[in-house]
Image (cartoon, rainbow, N blue to C red; front, side, top):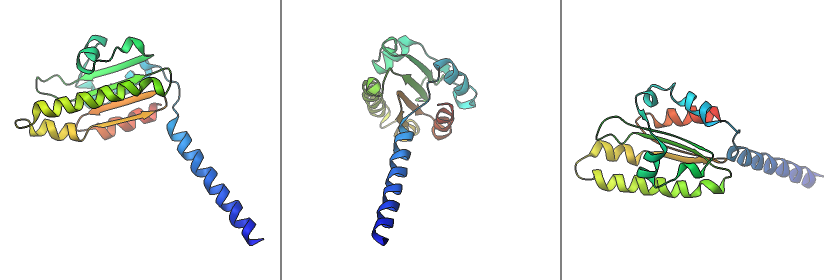
Length: 155
């Protein structure tokens, strides 16, 4: 009897863990307009300028027209590395190339600023990038953690 109870408890713990892991990977289907609206409420994002699909292609090599939507903001100063990129794909797998492009962008910027831009390199090293459902989020900013939480709250 005691062995059966242990198995049931273990099974329940395993199910709860699987539910937690699975639910963390899913995201609500939220329009990019609503995401953008929520992001610009943050003062750090509001201080950036909104980029275009052409900017994303230039800086990341990603054609956002191949995805369901994207939001891109970039710092206004010439030496700013502050950026926010959110891309919505048709599936989880669809945004994998965006993750690779983000990694390449960050690596290239670190190489650019090494030796003379220690503040920029520190921000780049502390960037946040993650995938939730069919969204990918990337942010380099002194407030990246807060901005990421605001994004998670929306989706």
